[in-house]
Length: 238
Image (cartoon, one colour):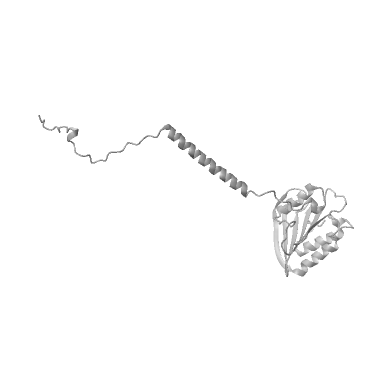
């Protein structure tokens, strides 16, 4: 019997096709499958991390060679030799020992107890010479600071040859370190020479006050004059 205003229910077997597609039921993964996938991801991450560590280790540099070795200086005071190296490193200087490139290099490292450390390097080529002056803040008797002054100029080869001759005339081929006693306060005068065939270093302590070593003070002054160092009354030579 049909009741007015009421839509009769259609039996399922008489209904037409639905306009909405049926949503397939997803199969829920089992706990075992989830554990296996997690273990696989973890193993892959471990392998990647291990490869990264191995690559970093391969790129890691070996021990840094010293600027000056005890054998080159005929000295057993390794702490003082390390002090020279720390100063040269603070000044951004290259290592000369073991450098076999062509040309000739002369270097004067001047470490005064109460004043700024400085270095003058001469790079002698076939026709010209590069003069590099570097001064850092601080005192040689304390920690080395940042760069205070850094200059480089190109000059004629003759000027650098005069400095080299003064160094040779001072007794550069003599003892690397003299037997004289070092005082607590003073200055270290470190001279280096490098060619493709040889390397030599000589150290003198406050040669200005030593009759025997005074020629080395003259050689050091020749380095400073060539580098156009501004000598002032509050920045003495000693």
